Figure 1 (cartoon, rainbow, N blue to C red):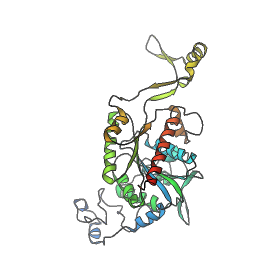
Figure 2: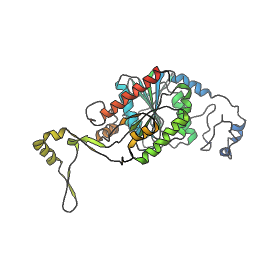
Figure 3: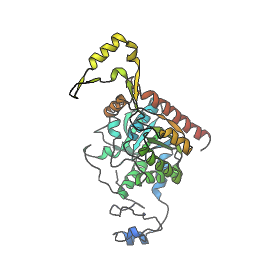
Figure 4: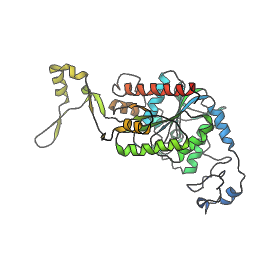
Length: 357
């Protein structure tokens, strides 16, 4: 797969904030001073980017395109993207999952696809498939080793994203889920620009409950408003720790301040004295929610709140093992919450289509 190049592509040796060869400021802005391409860009003919036509042709077979944004790192955005793709596929939709987090591609691991390679056919590059109706593309498949760093500057990131859109043969898809890096910079701007003419359903914003996350998420929502991207809703992830009481580890403090494990004794005691307790879920707030969390923010900003997903150790395990949390009954705290959110999201995309949005 090409790493950029071609007509209208930002050169690899361009400065970080290159305005682009097709910009009216090409070769003339302050960022262009000292760039080896300055004269070429200043005199190059300006015009529409033919790659956007190719992208539009590729995306013509994709019914719905959903971006997953976070505004802040570490909120579980990729975990949500992976489980959203799993859930949609389990609902018999044809699903594609595109990972444009160039420097931190975690999707291959979360889909159980580490070590897989992208293959080329006469129709273009083929996604790596989890199931017949769930295909994945990520720069992680292009790295020789999962531990290798993708050392890529801004212009080259944009070129890679464009390659993923114009060179990959997705075929007929009901949903293309796009997992983005945190923030509101190059990759997120580029994906919106490249897909602008193809029709993006909107973005799902993922946050955690505390104010330090919500401040950045507000910026992400402002980004959506500025680029004309519909906010389909906000998901509050890590919304408290929740798991069956029987799955907890119990500790007993000693006189010298140490702790000893008494899990077997505690479970046996409950089973003997109060067996109904073993059917309960224990819940504890982990983050400060005194600010009202994502639900309050959504009310203030008049945007939909899709729901809250608790911290579930079984969901974390499913992500580590690259499997769906819906496949069995192990993610008893998180899977029902995610299922409700996915159903709301499907309904919102269908409603937008019926309304002609």
